[in-house]
Length: 146
Image 1 (cartoon, rainbow, N blue to C red):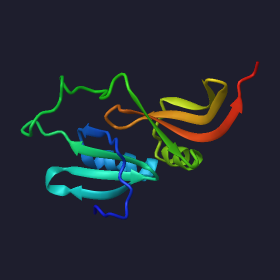
Image 2: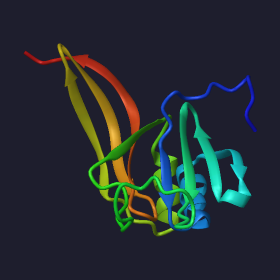
Image 3: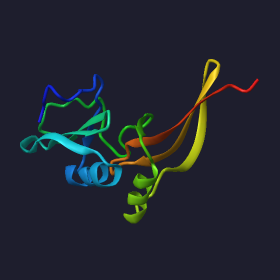
Image 4: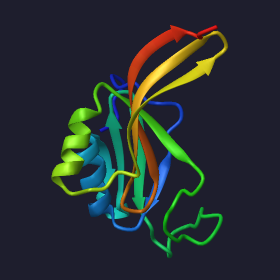
């Protein structure tokens, strides 16, 4: 439930999903999000994990349409959502136990920003509708090698 004690993100993506129950299993049971509040009658949930927040709403063609094109899988083509977590190992374990395939296996990557590089252990996975998530674990930063 909304509360003044919760820090609400200023940018929250809303994912239109085909089956809210399947999406909740993925986002909560496998990735680790928790329901912050829901509107069951609208098939809507607001999820949070750490400082990350997302909204899920089951597609309803009779509802006011915000879709800018035909909804066909994989949804969200051309975008990935980076989510920083404390550790990716527990998430990977839950996905493996559920026989859920990852899109890109775990890798260490360093990204340059001016004269430093930011490191992250990362992997990519698609949710049941094809939205692409990049889960990252912070590896710190280092000076760019000359």
